[in-house]
Image 1 (tube, rainbow, N blue to C red):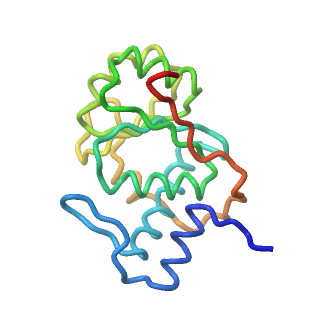
Image 2 (cartoon, helix red, strand yellow; image 1 turned 180 degrees about the vertical axis):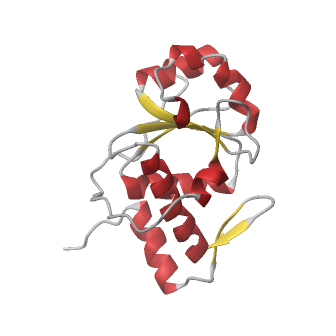
Length: 174
């Protein structure tokens, strides 16, 4: 019987088999499979250092960028659930989804921090769990790259199977 691979397994397998091959890119940057795998592993530790545990849900809103790929691979590896937000949503719509999905953290592109700050009081999140993709985030936000720089990838692996939820999608009709 063949075992179904998770996204994390697929990234790790390609990192082992073709480490220097181009894996992902956005309009400005690119990562090899090795770099993608390494950064996903660092992000797992960074998220765990915030106190997130398997099954926790993380709201994510950003324009297209490499970090989306890191986030999806890391979340699958950590057993966390991605709750992607459409960038066209208003603050109250974001608040509804984040509350309804019971998110434990938020990762946002810098363009969305002001909107999210406007609904912050409606969500019961620990202050350190507001993460901005910008190197110099607004007050009250942790910098994504700073969290990654402090990460230690040697923690015990988390048992994740193909049956574990990895994403929770809300549509315009939800």
